[in-house]
Length: 73
Image (cartoon, rainbow, N blue to C red; front, side, top):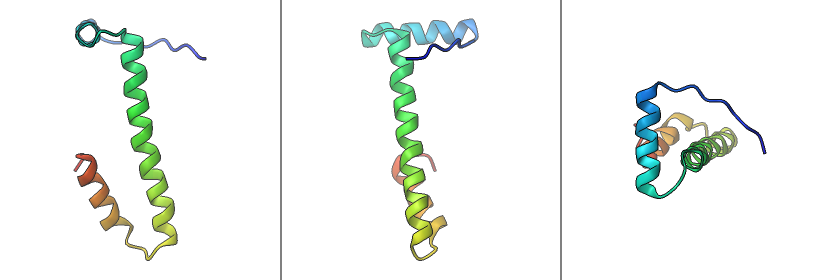
């Protein structure tokens, strides 16, 4: 396991602490969960791009649909 030093503005740190407390978890676990979600999104897009390259070349339309499904239009 690796350790990371993350510098955040004090107000953002305080808000993360409140959020973690409300969820009954630590800031560390909260950030770990956020990283997992971001990596899952990244992996899904990467897999899609690889498959689209092997497909019929409709990558942009497919990515548009993927972004819409993920709510990141």
